[in-house]
Amino acid sequence: MEQTYGYAWMLPFIPLPVPMLIGARLIIFKGNKKVSLYVGFSEHLRFLAYMSFLSTSKLELVTNSNSIQIYILCEFVGVCSYLLIRFWFTRLVAANACQKAFKTNLGDFGLLVGILGFY
Image 1 (cartoon, rainbow, N blue to C red):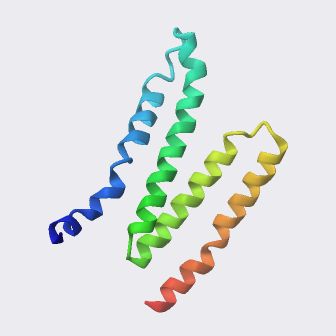
Image 2: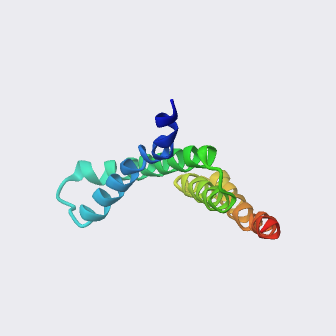
């Protein structure tokens, strides 16, 4: 059982290669406009990459015990929320919610001051 806990830190990194591979594919094939199906499919790939990055960030946030890393991962979750809301930028409600999510990320500065106060 103790050996299991020794490798538990690797568990949150299991979903991490998925957004990395999707992002690399989007960057590599961005200039290729010959495939018309890929142009519409790339938007869905981007959304799935955001979702995978969000799940990775949340999983790492829950399993972490270092307060500095918790702050950084909390910011990652906020950025992922911002990106997922921004994905639907054509809707007015989503655009307003995106601005609120960005302001909330700026409000996490108080959390940083509190963590640094403990140190």
